Length: 458
Image 1 (cartoon, rainbow, N blue to C red):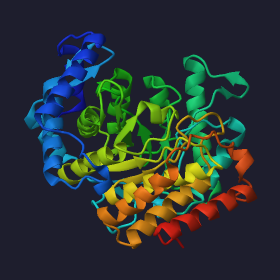
Image 2 (image 1 turned 180 degrees about the vertical axis):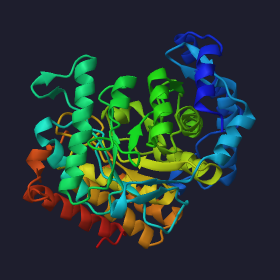
Image 3 (image 1 turned 90 degrees about the vertical axis):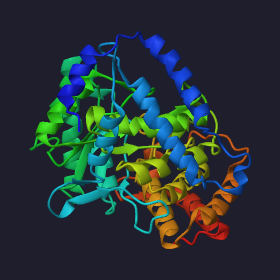
Image 4 (image 1 turned 30 degrees about the horizontal axis):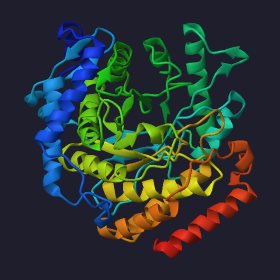
């Protein structure tokens, strides 16, 4: 595989392009290739929630490789394009591992690529990727680590530390050190001292990323770090610097590699191409072998409206291509538009978890898409993810059976608006690790509804 030092050289020597020019050509080229390879959604998605056309998967994969060869990856630090040959891309795909060993001792886990319509239970990250206040820090981590199926826990961000606003490099580095120490303390309090943690950057400057690495109180070589490729295939030197250090130190890396419809990708057709190309590019540029993958929409991420199709269909194409033609370890980001403590949240999360089980995507961090401090997630949503996905796997649902259930859920959600929901303190008891009485009643009601719709939950 091409070395990270070679990537570094190409960020200095590649073609010089202004970012605005890159963005405009990105849209033009991805639209052109989508047309060339006939990437288009079916006329009637009611026939199947998921893609059923294997030839489309072949075309979409070839389109993504061609797009990556013709466009490359844009370095926002140097305003240069990192170019790759087709042979370099395919060789990297072939050499990438399809599993990552994480954690230590009895808490060690193997996080691996899944199969479409697979029969193995999914790997699982229950949180966080969201802001919490420092007074809740280690207690929140403890509650999520108490879920025994947890393979790793990602960190969180916050605005103040020890009475100081986090502003400027000295406080950003200090806050980084505090975050990972709270993570270590939290998993220890849960009785899982060897569990893997992942650093969620307070800031993406190299000094912050590297300062998290500490085998005693921070990231161990068996832990991980989030080094995401930016939207529209963009990278930066700070994350590349951290990736080089990680190669020496040992941390695994993961990327937010979903594509965004409604931006420079255009519609879901262009987003499918970026959704396949982006995790491949993240693997080349940062050695991210785990990615949360798929297709989202700007209105979904900003919690403006609940959007199900054609995003669900597009996600299935992306995950089918990555799981059958690469070694990418896919994760589904469960990101409802409604907050904790609401029926909408649990129904939207159920849709994503049913999709993930069929698409071969592991489960990643349930989080309100428009999260605020202490207002993004609770352990109940994480445990709900496991209940739903396990039930789908154990029932041996195929795409058709899952489609029938998903359309019933879609009909139930039709016309609803996103709800803000409640803070974690309002709807969850962090001392006794249980939801509030009101939230538990909502949970049981939704559980009974899914049972009536055809998914047998324990």
